[in-house]
Figure 1 (spheres, rainbow, N blue to C red):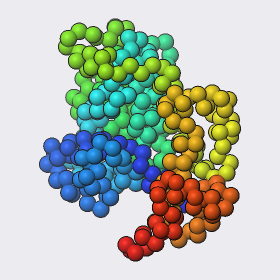
Figure 2: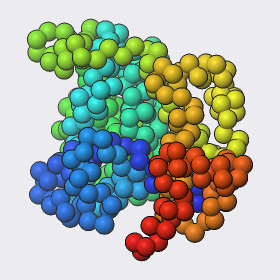
Figure 3: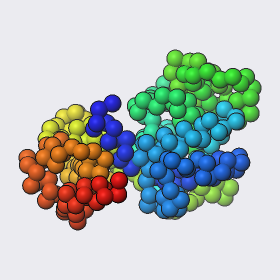
Length: 340
C-alpha cells in the first residue's frame, strides 16, 4: 500500500458511537474495556463524544483485539443484530419513513454505504427478491469474516420489517453446524465457504407496521423525513470522498470527478448542495487531514506535500493550511517533533 493509501487509513470516517456500542457488547460478555482499547489509539473520551470519529486503522485495531477474545464465532453476527435503525443515527431513523418496502431496502443499503463505509455493498433485485453482496474494499485480511458477520447481522435486524426469510452466504468457513446459526435467526438459512458473501431476501409483501407497537416507526415518521433526493446526494458524497481520497492532487477537479461518476458537473454540484456540502469543502477537509498526517508522521518536505495535495507552490499550501487550522505547516511539524 502506498503512502497516500496508508494516510487514507488514518482519516476519521466512522462515528465513535459504533465503537461505544461494540465495547459495551464485549463488556456484556465479560471482556474488560481496557483490554480492548489498549494500544488502539481509541480513548475513553472518544467513546463518550457524540462528535468523535474513528479512522480505519483504529477500527481494525479494536476489532483485531476483540476478534481473538470472542469465544463464540457467532458473536460478531449477534452484535450486528443489535445495530437497529436508531443505532445507525439520524439517517437510520429516516429509512423507516417509507411505506414502499422496495424503497426501504434500497435506503438501508444506501445508508450503510454512507454511514458505515467499512465494506461496500452491491444491491440487486429480481422481482420481489433482493440480494445484497458485501465487497471488501479495504483489504481487511483476517478481519473480513468478523466485519462481514457484523454487517449481515445488522442487515437482518433492519430488514426484518419487510423480510422474514434470509438466505445468508459467507465466503469463509465455520466450525459450527447450520442449526447453531439458525438459533440467531430462526427460519433463515446459513451457508459457508460460498463464492461470495451475500444475503438473499424476498419481501413479505406486507405493508410496514404503523400501529402503536411499532415505536421506531412512529419516531421515524415524526422526527425524520429524508426524501430520495437527499439519499442520492448522500450516495454522491461518499463516492466523491472516495475519489478525492484516492487522488487529492491537481487532477482532482469538479469536472474530472463528475466525468468519473458519469454525471455533469452541474448535477454533481446540485447533489453535493442537497447534502449540505460542496466539492471545495469535501476536498479541503480531506486535504487538511492528509496534510496534518504528512506533517506529524512523515518527513516529507513541505513543497512535496504541497505538490501531492494539488497546490502550485509551498506558499499556497501554507496559506490554505493556516486558513483551515489556524496554524502554519511548519508550526505543526515542529510541535509534533518535540513530542517524539
